[in-house]
Amino acid sequence: MSGRIRLAVLIVLNLTATTYVGAEPFIDHFTSSEIDDAWHFSGPVNIDNQRGRDDRHMSLKIGPKGMVTLMLRNSDGSGSLTLWVYDDLGAPAQPKVRRAGPQWGLVDSRGKRLVVGSIYAPYLNGAATFSAAEYIPPKEQPFFNVQYLGEKRESGWHKWTFNMDPDQGLLIKYDDKPVKRYSWDKSKFLGFAGIVLVGDSTEADAQTLWVDDVEVRLGPAMNTKPMPPPPPAPVVPETDPEITAEAVCLLPEIRGVHPRLFFGPADIPALREKYQSPAMKMYRTDLQEYLGACYPPDHTHFLTDATDGQR
Image (cartoon, rainbow, N blue to C red):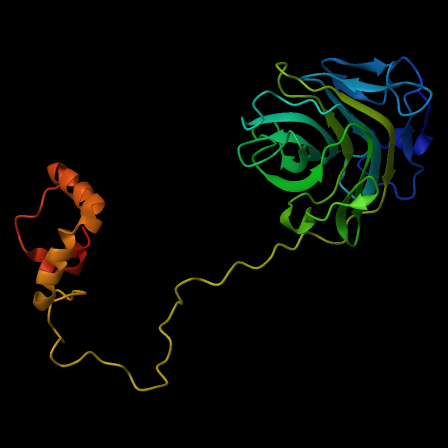
């Protein structure tokens, strides 16, 4: 039995869908060489007696393709998770290739995860910073729906807090400081039923995940939901604006004259002279090289047909 606190009310949580409010927290300091039976795990997961956050030198170690879950209720609600994660700054040799490194965070009753970790993609910087991911495995991957957090990875133990407030939503903290880039209003994660710890997705260049001093507190049902920002105004209005001033009309001599050009017959001699000048040699060469692939039309429909003129 590991060093943690568990009341009988938490045992009942696995047998009923009732949300228990005010229950004592679940705490695990991993002081035993055996993993407590409350945790469900698969893959390379064990107690590491060589690395801990204090003099005990013990922590939970999750290797590549390992996973640990702790389900505390059958319905989603509010509450908080606090845990310490050790970062050895491990990263793949090609950090811009899509890949999921170690992750830790919350899981809801449907299996949907909201986690933080080292996530790699061309648009992320997983080797140096953290991202938050929201996904339902196995049909979704962590890099499908991410929020770049910008929090820098640093070697050593770091404290992570997920505070799911029933009235305010989710606030994530890194070493007791709010992660400002994370916005719950961009999320579809409405509450949690347990926690999840996920090892590196591949064995090549794998990073090990160490976790210590886990504390989970359960709260009541959520009273609020994410409020995404309103969609932007359409680029083209649904109706033409009302004309409130005198309309500007084309001059009578050019009305109905097609095609309408930026230059006329009187401009052509000067344009030809400029085209043959030394300054235009680079552009002239490109145009001439294009002639072999250029097929001019054998008709003049483009003079009166705007659609044909765009081709």
